[in-house]
Length: 390
Image (cartoon, rainbow, N blue to C red; front, side, top):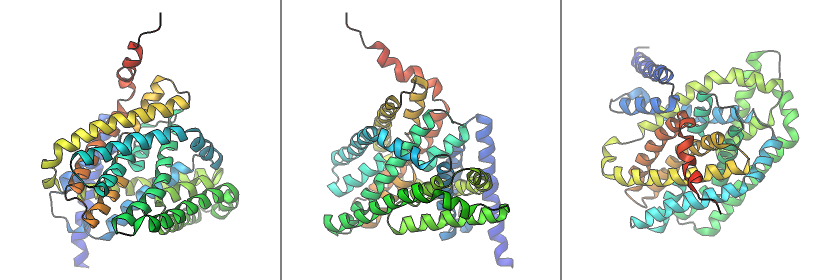
């Protein structure tokens, strides 16, 4: 029994620090993410054995899974399908601007094409976890929110193609092996979407019950099973959870959202803590300048992507600014890609550069969202200066 006492003490102290960070965020009127990251960086300077091992990693991953699941509960399969079709041109622009920015930047640094491909992926994909958490903290429920979610989901689905291909190339499997894995992943994603369309009502009946305990356990079990299957088929677990959320609707969706929200918030705080614990602060100094330059470049390219999506949705300037700034943050998927590069040892500077880059934008993105409405004049000034024809 005595062996568990230090673990309880350490975890209690860590959670208390995260609670202080959340309180400070509320006082400052900021989303909690930047303060969680700062708290995590502070804690990473200490040797805390209770934070080592796979348990924290699993709990952190559960936070992202529940976050996307609860967002999925707010949308229907029809809305998802319509939005993906509506914003396909914005998705293409997203890839062209943001992937090629990272790819070209890596080539300028003298990296080989495989490392450049990974950096392109790192700069391409926005952090669903960070953005959706900030949306929740700021209470954004306007017309801009479905547009933001549509872009995030399109990117996560595109990762079902990109990740297997990248992994296969890194291990020397070649394009054909990567294409096979990619085909399985795409088929799994399409099957999940069809299932959400056709069997959503039956799924809701399975989850529904008079007992909140039964609803909680059934819903949590369901989302974990779906996420596990998605991960096994090389589709993002978060995408699987999102599609499971879309499949549920009506009164059971509302009850599930209420019951799982506290568990989501707890595990999301652990996710951001786990993210910062993986950052080696000592390696960040020598990559600080290129990481900052890359962050500025790709923040601008994401703003262009967001404005394109907002125009397609017919949003006004305030809503367009919100969409544009919300897409800046990079996070969990970028770290996964950096991890692939570290395992394959394609470029020694890839991991520290990715860590510094993600850290900058993981903080800048939510802070920018907090002040998005104040930034509207700056994002629209160039448009007003364009001279009109005589």
